Length: 291
Image 1 (cartoon, rainbow, N blue to C red):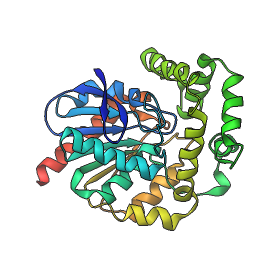
Image 2 (image 1 turned 135 degrees about the vertical axis):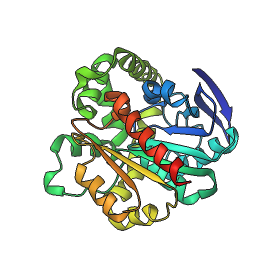
Image 3 (image 1 turned 120 degrees about the vertical axis):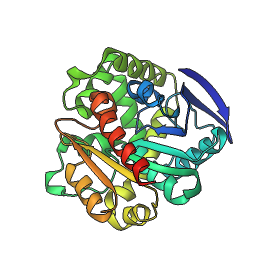
């Protein structure tokens, strides 16, 4: 693994995991980073050249005057693909899944296929939305005071406490998270302590997701622009994006392949990387057989 900085309308920090074959670009979620893919990267490099950018406003990629919205980061992903030579398989988690959908629809010549891992999408059943989920995701979106809420939350916790609370939120069983993944997340949490722009970036990115979560028609427009082969993966124990949301997506796109990972939460590539890759390999083989 090599961390490098590329210039595509501004500096972008990228993890180059190596490998040979078609390009695979891994797109992290809200408050995530390129490190989120480290547990599946070695396996993926057996058949792909794997890279993972820190999106604008996250990890080591400063906004530097750039937008941090999902639309802007979809353009960034397309530019990253151009830089490395596409088209590319996009693998996106949570917000990164939504960004991947937008990139595939807006820049179809750059994207060969999609793997959507618990992607952000419309709330399917408001009556079943957990209070903690609404508070955690909604607080930073509040106009004017969102960044202040983020700063106050972080100030009251050590980086270690923040990472543990994060994994308790996104993982069905935080005890299965490997020490290496915890260490990577801790590095990013400590980095954010010195990034004055980080709370604003989080708030602005969160607000850009909101229309796709709150307005089904807005999300459907993006969903139906996707023409590439797509695998939708979803953990049955995801407390962030409802399983019913994935089921609804699958009904809208019956041409997609869908797999549910039993007992897994919001970040399968961290909680159950071997199972996720097994499902991916089966789907990938089916694509090759059809071609």
